[in-house]
Length: 159
Length: 159
Length: 159
Length: 159
Picture 1 (cartoon, helix red, strand yellow):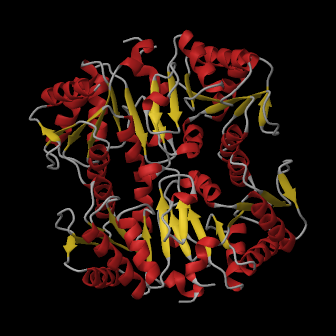
Picture 2 (cartoon, rainbow over the protein chains, first blue to last red):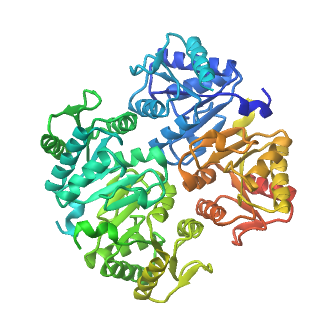
Picture 3 (cartoon, chains in turn cyan, red, brown, yellow):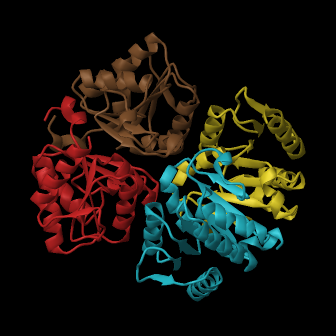
C-alpha cells in the first residue's frame, strides 16, 4: 500500500476495554489483523487491552495504526501504534475516535466503550459488535473475520 | 444564597434530549426548580429541550444555572443560562458536564445523553433517572422532587 | 446583584502566570477587586498566581468567579473560585477562557498567557495589559482600576 | 519507508497562515518536500495555505501527512492529507499539533500560528522559523532545506 493511496482507504475504529482476558485479547488481535489485510487503517485509543491487541494484529499483518491518546505525550501509546495523537483532552478524545472512523468494531468493553458507542449511534456511523453492549443498531457477529467483512460492507453501503 | 457560599453547594447536572414532548419539558422544568429550591447549582449543556426546561425551572426558583455549550459563542445558550461556557469542543463537552457534576439526573434522553451516562458510570458518579436508559447503577424515580431528594442523598453518602 | 441579572453582565478574563511576585499578586488582586466592584463576572484558569490573586480580589469585593480548569477535578481550583469548570482538556482550555470572555486583562504572563493573547487577537476580543507582552492591539494601562475601566469601555464600544 | 519503521521517525509540524501569497506557498511546499525527503512525518492543521502547501510538498516527495482538523468531518482536510484527524475541538486543536510534534517549523503566520508557537515555547519544543514571529527561542533560517536540517538537528540534540 503506497502512501499516496492512503486517503482512499477506510478508517476503522476498534473500541473495547483497556483490561481484558486472554481470549478477548486474541479476538481483538485478529480483528486488527483482518483490518490490515483488508487494506483499511486501524484507529483506536492507543492504550492497553483491546487497543493494544488490535494494533499488534494490524502491525503483524503489515497495516497502519493510529492511536488517539488521552494524554499529552506520544510515549503513552502502546508499542504497536504508528501514528500516536496525544490529544491531552482525556476521555473526551473518545469523540475524536468516532469522528475519524468510517465504521467501528466493538469488542467487549466497559463504560468508556459505551461512550464511544453512544457518540457513534448519535452520528449514525455503522457499528459491528463482538460480545459487547446490546443495541439494535449494533450488528452482532461471531468472528473477527466476519466483523471486518461486515463493517466494510456497511461502510460501502453508506458511501 | 450569598456568592461566598457557592463553592460549598452541590453541582447537579440535568441531562436529556434537546427535542422533547411537553410532558417531559414539564418534568425537566420541575427538576430544575427543585435543584434551585434545594440550594444546588444546576449545570447542563445549555441548549434546548431538557436543558432549557431545567434551566427555566431553576431560574424561576431563584437558582443559578451553568450551560456547558458545544459551540464557541455565548449566545448559543438558551435564555435561562446565567453562566454560559462556550467550549467550542462540540459533543466532547459532555465529558466536561460529567467532570463538573457531583451527581446527575437523566430525564429521557437520546444518544448524546447516553454518552453522558457512560462517562458518569465510568467515573462512578451517582445518577438518578426519570424515563431514561436502563442501567443497574441508575436509581429510577418517578417524580422531579424525588429525583432531587435522591441525588442529594447519594452525593452526601459519597462525600 | 441578583442571580437573574447575571447574564446581562460582562465576563472579564484575567490572564497571567501561575507563579508570580508579591507585587504582581497585589496588582492581580486589585484587578479582580475592581471587576467585582464594576459588577462584572471574573473568569480565569482557576489555578495559582494571577488566577488565585484575581479570584481572591473579586471575592473580597463580593463578586462571582469562574475557573476554567485544565484538569478533571473541581478541587484543583484555588479557594476563591465559585464555579469551577474541570475541563480535562489541559492547556487547550485556554481557548475556552477566550471564547467566554467579553474582554481580557493580561497581567504579566508567560507562554500560557501568550497562547490566550493569541486566541483573543484572532477573535478580535479587546485586551488590556499591565506589564505583559507587547502587541499593538493590547491597550497598555498602569493601574488595576484603569485596566477594568478601559476594558469595560472597549467592550461597550464593541457591542 | 515501511510502515513498521514509522514510529521511529520524527513528527515535524509545519505551522502558518491559512491564506498566503504565492511565494510563501512555494516556501511551505518546499518545507513539506524536505520533511518527506528526510524521512520524517509531516503534521499540520490540515486546512489551506501553509497547511495545504506543505502537505502537497510532502506528498510529492513520497511522504506521509497528518492533518489535525478543527472540525468534525474528515472531508474538511485538503487533498494532500493522508491521515485526517477531525478533532471537533476547533482552535483548541492547536494544542494537539504541538503535543504531537517533535519539532515545529513556522512559516509566516497570523494569530493562530502565534498560539501554536506559544504552546510550543511552553513545552520547550524546538522551533525553526521562516519569516515568522520574532522570539529569541525561534531559530531563524532562510531556506526550506535549511529549516528541515536545523529542526532535525535540534530534535536530535533533545532526545
